[in-house]
Structure formats: structure tokens, C-alpha cells
Image (cartoon, rainbow, N blue to C red):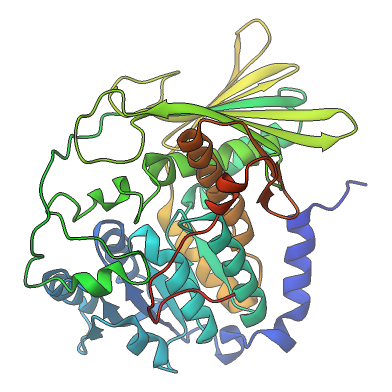
Length: 431
């Protein structure tokens, strides 16, 4: 008989407690549509919106954005064929105050992910939040605590966890297809554009920049910061390791079977290529070591090159898993291949990320109370790899980390970087 996993336990516990702890929409009838508010319908938010507006299980009742032009465009898209348009606002608090809203989808810039999620949970809403779930490690812990208190579903936007070919790959790895998996390598290799050097200026009239900043430290507006390029600035994003890298780091950790934090982190990197206003590395190499006790350890490595548009091992971004009886190459967008010790291809499968499946999983878990494929605990562990990697890169020091206490034990200044300072703002996370 196999030993139950943490996910098995959480799944069973959630189902058992649904009737008492989580009012089930399923009890109201399967035809009852989930009333959803969209917060931040920008790039990825628009992608979500295009799919959700066609989902018969969802009714989009609110659209929220601080950019008036984006709000107008998203509202037209969200209405679809419905006779009644969704309500609109630039203030997410109005969405959260509406008792008829069952859930919200948060696709804001990263610095708003945790604050908006915590506000939504405190308001009694289920949450789908884009990756990375947090801007710093401390925020992730606050999100877990808020979800536990609210007894609501939180799905993180690492959609590979709902993708069939990835689930197949993980079943192969955990089933011993390449023997004992001792190490994994993750890479993020692509070309990112130069954003140039610009001086601060006034924000455009359609943008409420003060609300966009939210509880983050106030900085002047720059025209090369929005849209999208905010992720290259320390105050708002985590660089590309938190953008694309977190997807593959999540798979690397999953394939290794690690449901805890690493204990040692070492990193080197910086801006080796781009001469512009980007603040995060364009080149980065990180090692994460997991201490399993009893002398057993696992190693996860990450490589990032944002100036190379050529593929590695056949994939722009990917994961390689090295076992005692072979290895697997996995691309979340492409598929997987298993090789034996003699480099002979044994089996393979094709596939690509399935966003619709991730939406379905979120909706099903709202109805049943089950643990979602990418619950906040999993999202926190994977986002924390990005935060720890960036701390190690910025300090240039080997980080020793206590997974249970979630603190850096060998550098007091580095330990302070696990959290951030907030300005006085209604969105500041409390906990």
C-alpha cells in the first residue's frame, strides 16, 4: 500500500470539510453560474477573458482596471453576446464589496497579486491569481494564512499543473521511469527586448498611476515601465525568473518531489547584455539544494539567458530530470522524452499548456471544495524559489535557509529581503 502524499491528505481533508466550512455552489445546482470579477484585464488578463467569456459556467459581472482605455476594451470583450454588460470600476474594493461575486481572477502586475488576493479572501471570495503569486516570500505565507482562515479556493496561474502531458510526465517520474531522480535542471532561454533609458514623466491621462502603484513604495512614472515592462523593476516584479522562469521551476520542484523549501541557495548573475533601465538580471545561474535528512539531498538548478533566442535540448524553456536509470527532457510547450542510460529514446509525448483545463479545475474546486491543481501552498513554494534566487543573486552570498521558520539564518540583511516595505495604503497586507 502506497504512503499518502501531502496532496492526497489535503484533498481528502478539503472534501470532508466542504459541507461545514465552505458553502458549496454545487448545492445550488450545477447550472448555477459562478459570478466572476476580473481584476487587471491586461495582457494575460485579456487571454483569460477571451476564454472565460465563452465558458457557460461563468458569468463575468465585474471588470476592474486602473487604465480607462484597457477597461473600456475589456468591458466590451467581457460582455460577449450577453444583453447586460458587466459593471466596471478602477477600484477593486467595489468588486470585493459586492456580495453577489463568488470569485475573482487577479491578473494585475505582480506587486498587487498578494495584496489583492488577501483582500479578496477577507471579503469571502474564491481567487484565481496569476503567477508568481507573491512579490516576496513573506507575502506568500500571508496568502496561505488568509486562505486557511477564509476556507476558500486559491488557484495560482501555473497552468501546467492542469496540463495533461505534464501530468503524464510527473506520473512517469514519480513512478520510477528513470529511477531515483536526484537532480533537475531548469532553463529560461529567450530574447527580451531592450527597454532603453528614459527619464520620469507624467503618466498618461487614462492611467490612475497612484492606484496602479498601490501599497508598493512610490516611484515616478516612466514611459518604458508600462505596459508589461514593470516586471523588470524591483518595486513591481521579480524579473523573468518570476515571469517565465517560475513555470519551469514549479515543474522542476514537482518532478523532484519536493514539497518544502530548499536549505541552501547559491547564485551568480546580472546584466551582461542589456544596457537599459531594467533592474533584474538578464543572465542568471542558481543552485537550490534540498536537505531531506538522513544524508539525502536533491539539487535543482536554474539558468537564464534573456539574450538568446536559440533553444536548449529542443525547448526555449524547459526542464531536464536526471535519474539513476535515465533522464527526461520536458517542455511545458512541446512535450516530453524519456531516454535510457545509453541515450536511447524510450518513449515520448506531445502537448502544450492547457489554460482551459486550469479554468475548469478552478471552477470544479469551487463547487466541490477540493484542493486545486495549483493551490496557494504549491504556488508559494515555487514563487519562493524566485525570491530566494534573486536574494542570493543580489547579495552574492550563499543563502542558508530554514524551511520551517522561513528565514535566512546566515545573513541578517538578506533575511530582511524576504519581506518588503509598504507605503501607507489601503491595500497593504496585514499579518
